[in-house]
Length: 391
Image (cartoon, rainbow, N blue to C red; front, side, top):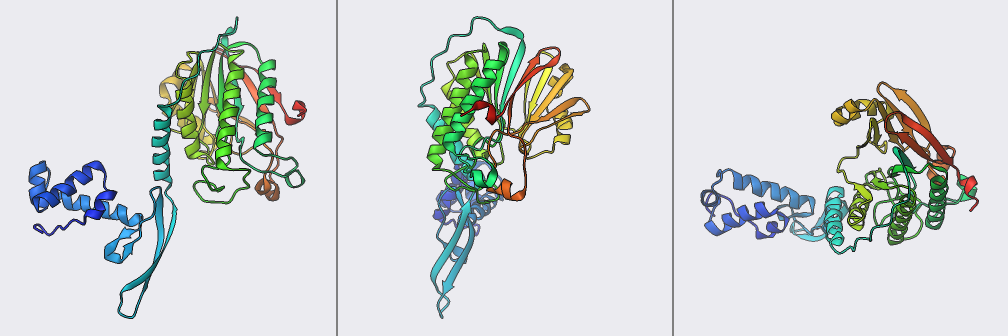
């Protein structure tokens, strides 16, 4: 072919729409130069596009120049290829090792959730409570809840599975709502790692470490959605305006995303509910002159957060003399003042799994509801422990 660029049409399956347009032009017009003239682009661009597409295909296991001819499914990446040759040097067999492509899996899940949300019938509005204290906001924090984790009392001190997670979470929220003031606003803060793992395999999403999982992923999804709906429903009974915040955790990177999208669609007709939707794992909500920041804690250490939030949310930071940044991740309580902000690390209500128990990590299980005044900051805290629930 002219210009020395011969296109293998099989590569078109790995091209973006724009890349495919360019490569098809090369095929149709007989070379890179002619295609470039017809498309109004530089003649060096088609060869570069073809190289990029071939690299992408190779990551998926397709590189016929190297006898890689067994591509892996969409959402996976080829981890290694072993090809067997006969005495004549011809390939006679091939073994392809694949692993999950986290970025592509997230893309697939995002597209799936957006399509599903088009079919979700939003729930009807719920009548507001009769009276509320206008200057107050109550923050209900569920961090490191690990729905889908399996824990054994003989090993970690308490049992945990999807059923226990649901009954414990709802009972804890009932107790917190009952003891908290009737503030005008509330935040239901799902502070990351609400789900124990992020897909069909019970492993951590980034490193593939095995986890103690209870039940099937589909059941985890059902229970997680049901718990969050009940938490929001209980908050609506007492507070006029409820914000649902679902933070990214290191165990549920993709699941936190589709949960946000799902509940955004579910509550789109409910004027008293706002689902906080952010693509960054750092979140901030302003309540008068009080700023509330949130990060699971898996990407930045606690002492790094004040500087980061001051830069990331510069305008809000400047308007708020009171700044509180909430984290989780480490499963135990810590409350420390830094320059310009307090960083509150929340404990978890979940039991210890085998990894934590055998590693010797121990912390008191608890959950809190913190009420903030629009001008004066923290105004009161309610704490609930599993022993108080008498389940």
